[in-house]
Length: 260
Ligand code: MN
Image (cartoon, rainbow, N blue to C red; front, side):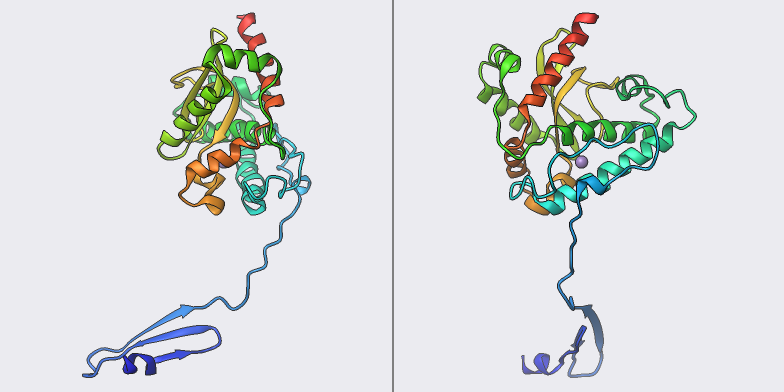
């Protein structure tokens, strides 16, 4: 043991580990950088974030990055909004320049796109899904009201049954994906999941419909706060759902069903 200790040298910035050997058969030096200072992290403001010019822009985040803390902390929200969401938006805009999709509403792009077009599929999905996600967040806990609450009681029995279905399917989703509350083609509320950045508007949807609520299940949405504890993230997210907006989405989605 003493020998090992005498072989340790600590300099200002490196930990040098000498693997000593009595017979001098082997000498190994491994340099392990040590953190010199606390890295300074600056959290900006969502209002400063802009996508590059193009067909689609970002939905505004109507509260600062710490608005959901401690459930979802500033660094998670800033990275998600100003890095992931912006990247999907910029990539989508690039992908559709001078194509039939350039002036098309995002919902129509998602319904029409060729699933073999991986770049368009990922980025159009990523843009739509994240726009819905950031649009449905609110600092203060709410519960469903108005038209939606009646529909939830009628179709799921109670809000707590809907909650169990959403959380249950979210927990079971393996790998990256989303859990959704959708209005299906008959105007009925259903819970469903999709993989990667797909969503229920796309041709491959198991339950096709108009999403009115989406929960991001990618690790980037929660890993900094919860690591492997996806269930804790889902519980935390659930406290910040803007059910007033879900209700607005529900009413809009029903109008589309009636038009058909
Ligand atoms: Mn995401």
